[in-house]
Image 1 (cartoon, each protein chain N blue to C red):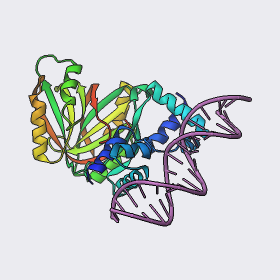
Image 2 (tube, rainbow over the protein chains, first blue to last red; image 1 turned 90 degrees about the vertical axis):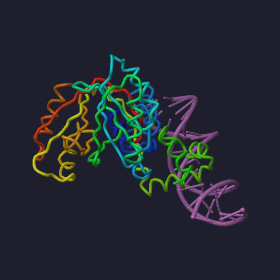
Image 3 (cartoon, helix red, strand yellow; image 1 turned 120 degrees about the vertical axis):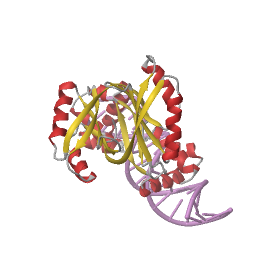
Image 4 (cartoon, each protein chain N blue to C red; image 1 turned 30 degrees about the vertical axis):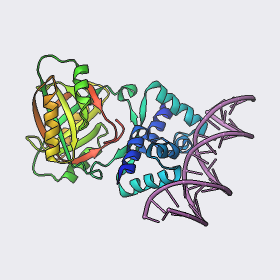
Length: 145
Length: 145
DNA sequence: GTTGAAACCTGCAGCGA
DNA sequence: TCGCTGCAGGTTTCAAC
């Protein structure tokens, strides 16, 4: 992991479909050398994969919310993860310090759809009380992390 | 936007570096037809771009937090956005309903680095009080939204 | 890390439903 | 309009250096 690797990562963060020639130019390398570096970054796990950035509005998913989750008992993170990953409206989830046990980021078509998804979260085993925070607007998204 | 477009989106969400032949196979199309569809999805804005999924731990960014921001006065979302986008540790930000005005997702190397970045957020013009919630672990990340 | 050659992919025509 | 087939040009891949 040196300055060349970081230049390669910056390049594919901006455009994951860049050709190896473009990546090489951004890092001061030839195309084959760029491919070997990129393959190594994927193999070591520094880069987990490549994905598209989809506009949820274009797919008519307008409603976004954060859910503060208070658990009953002492579920392990693995149990919580397993309970949440079956709910497609759950986009991200973290365990956190503070009053709540976890924060869940949700995406839904509209408010009724969100309400239904929240009820599914509340119905899963280790979840007790939840508190919803509705997102009004996206201010800033830096892709890739 | 039909079932074929959705199959193409699912394919590039899983692997943004897929060749047009692979995308076409996933959608039941030939490679040139797949390229035309994908180009159209990018042109219409349904797909904003393509990016790599980086493991922050591999880059030694271990510390993650959410900041609830309470603003002074009535800043516009655009003002808030401009104030936050100059701080590289700010990964995502939303305006929200509820007590806080905005939620800011931050990523830093360690606790001292996070503290310094939080101070930069608090020093920006429209930000008054903040409340930090430290992330203990990532439970779930679904890429692409 | 760099070169060179073969296989593959991309992009653009033209054509048919 | 949207899909499929060929062909020229560029890109990726793999080898040897």
